[in-house]
Image (cartoon, rainbow, N blue to C red; front, side, top):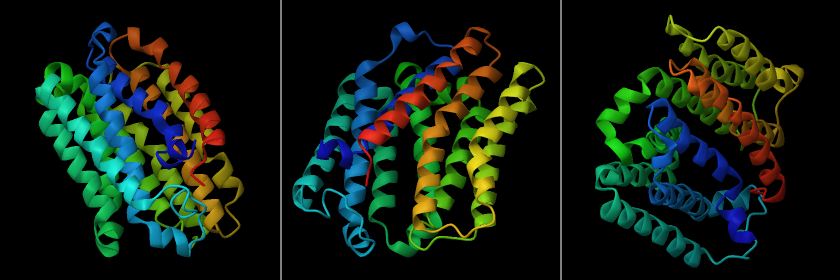
Length: 290
């Protein structure tokens, strides 16, 4: 149970959704869904979550965060070894079974290692970009294992990758204020820009007419609580809650990408993003990181 909490297992459905939507957007069949490639991606993602707590132990102690390593329920050295072992297993899987994505696997590992163990000043300026890049690669990972990164990048379409990466970029910027809190209007600006990121999908002249309605609905749902709190200072707890809420809402961005897809078969599958959000929220209640 504590290991699930440490690894942020509640966010596993969002990783699975990234992986699956990338395949759908590239018009590849789900019958070829590369299971072991997903296992490798899950190892990288959850190994990174473990190593993040290893690297941030002193910060978490000062912030009085009741996380497993802080409470000494899990030994820090053991957690470090488990995280690195998960990276090693991910690299081995890709090298043996999906050599096309091996370089991407190493790049992804290096990206999250740089984020977790870089100096505080460097993380402050590069952190959001690194996290957005890592999440964009999780969208490409599955289809890259099937057809290679170059074709995957072309088939998924830049606009889908960009709007998803931008969403995480703005949410990551907001998360940087978890230690000290921030003025409500600044937080609302970050949420607002994240909500506007999917409007890039309107660039296509062939988009589904329902996309505009879905974009408005997404904005109302995602910005409702921040708008209600616009007149008060956002303390640490408020910023943390809003960050988690926004992360849980991320699958809806990919649902919008599916709705904007030229492939009509993807439009109905966009509704699955609602199910992913529900599952993620329920898992987050059971395996809360704090």
